[in-house]
Amino acid sequence: MSKIKILIVDDEPDFLELMSLRIESWGYAVTKVSGGSAAIESVEKNAPDIMILDYMMPGMDGIETLRRIRKSGSNMPVIMFTAYPNTNTMEGAAHLGISAFIPKLSAYSEVLPALKTALSLAEKKIVK
Image 1 (cartoon, rainbow, N blue to C red):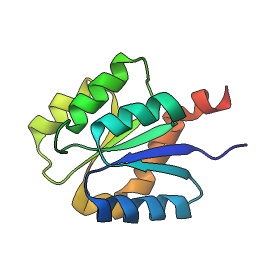
Image 2: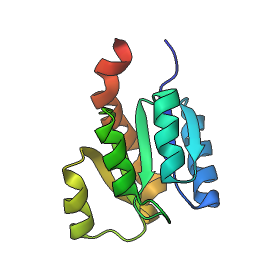
Image 3: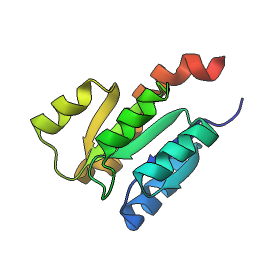
Image 4: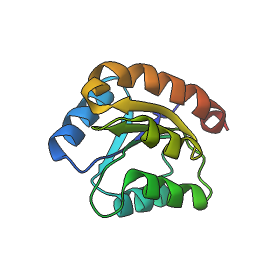
């Protein structure tokens, strides 16, 4: 069975690098990009199984990025990170089918359980 492909999208290079190293250490195949346009292109080219997406990015934020990805037909599970969690943020993203919404401060401790949840949602797609 091939490795599960995870796309990580974040504009902070240090966070992007640390998170990708951590997730790779769990046995996942990781692609990392630093913005919304690059995320859309990567989804089209690489068809990841799960995406981890930053909410606040310059240019195209995470919500607009995900809106465009959903419009293209992708229904992969998405875990969204934000440095500034609030109820409005989560409510505004709920209709886009986000599997988990995690504050960045909790990212290192909460990402594995969130990945397992997202993986269970992606499992049918991966098996096909």
